[in-house]
Length: 396
Image (cartoon, rainbow, N blue to C red; front, top):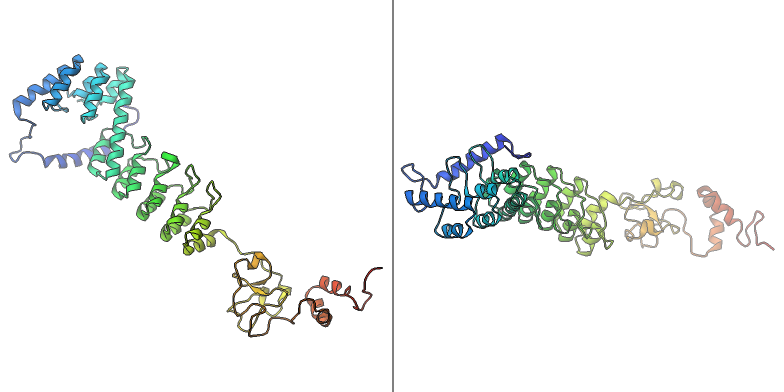
């Protein structure tokens, strides 16, 4: 009899081999196993414990545990005290055994204590044992106790079990890369959400563990799962100034999604003065405005300006050489300020095209030929100015 979802035989065999290597450290020099409290006395107290558990004698079980009884003692068919408690339906005794460290061991047929509880229609005991195993696995993962994580996986601890945390989230939060790798290999859900909607990835990002962020992304983690407050892994990277992490997240599909308060990762990076990250995010998501009409600036392609066009400056009707390298006048182009040395009104070289003084009608008239070549609509407007020829003038 076996549970529906079990670790593969190959995995179990490999893990058992590792555990046997660890166990060999505790073997006596002459090759004999070091039984706690020695030989026959331990055999006797172990047998008494099995009998007390089977009969449901809670007080005797408590006494025998206090006397040092081995909680993993086995009878001829390899039943342990916890297996007997699960099989016989004694939840109080099962709880006592678990509180003292009893394992979800298997009998000679590979049937575990959880299996026996389910087979014997004691689901409360099965849930109790399963919950305890998850709690132990989370604790081991949080502490980075790799050998304990291995042992608990062999005991069929659910790698996707959740309390306020999960094993993977706990390992990721604390930076235990080896445990993260092991849990992923054992089938941990890389995107499982725990407390306040956090995932292993958001925990790793929050705590600056770039190697774990990379490992989780390689395992297919979604970088855009928000917490209950709308924070993503990129939000945390932007807030704390983790440039390399932000780059990794962006390269794997991270977005500039806002939090519940409306702040984007780019906003947050700028707020905390991480301008390199703000610029990095902008390079992924902020597009420059469309090119201004080429006809506006016949002396430079598409109205381009800046250091690549020495000696050319923006004209008065589009005086700002924007951060994007084009002349303009609106916030769309110039909201972030103008480049110096090439914007209209700066000292130095002449601006591109004829100068136009603000409100200078005479100058406008003198530009009629130039304006007509640039924009016929402007030419028609010019004809309506006071004193202009060609039928212009004010309406009566």
